Amino acid sequence: MEREIRDSDGITWTCIQAFSGLSDIAEAEDAAQVKDQPNTYWVVCTPSGGAQSVRLKLKDKWQENYSDEELLQEIKSQQ
Image (cartoon, rainbow, N blue to C red; front, side):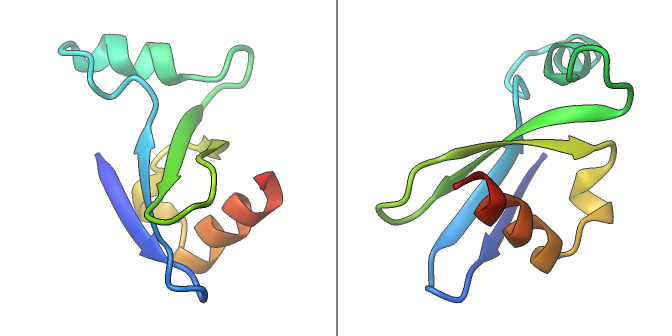
């Protein structure tokens, strides 16, 4: 699942759980899980502009449970 958010600079960030392209959903979930951290997944956020992509560690159900502001704060902390 993909999620888009826009920051105050007008950059649109597209966030997607790592390994989401694998055909087997269970395999993709397992591959994206952060080792030794239950219910935590790698999420890659790619900007529309010149900024660099960031890799985040987010809790399960991040698509629904994180507000836009929380996701933007996570992105800024990794830049």
